[in-house]
Image (tube, rainbow, N blue to C red):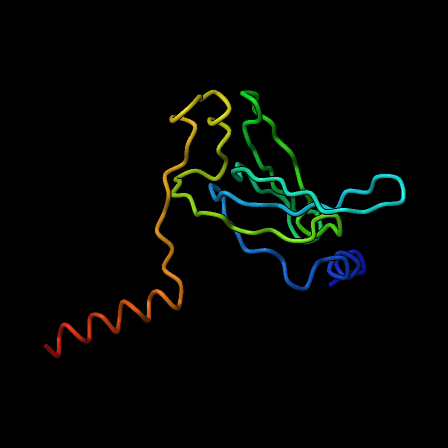
Length: 133
């Protein structure tokens, strides 16, 4: 590992947010207005993710008053305080640039069912009950 890689690793966040392409996310962004600092929430669909280590960025797209708005966020920036996943999307592409040309219902990404640890254990318990009965 050379010196450049060591410097890049020192700037990465220890707990990087976990999300994928197609997910609808709420990005909590720190906004500085004069001397005041506040957090503004930007909600939209992740249409791309690129880069590696501390240069990784992701693009979030939302439709505001009928106009499509895209914003690029660095994953490891101190400006991004946190990223919440609202719903997970089922996609078959790495970049969802085709959503730019779609309108209305056609611009939606199909939702994918999230099977987390708690949901998986609940399904196992239900399956065991049906086997015993």
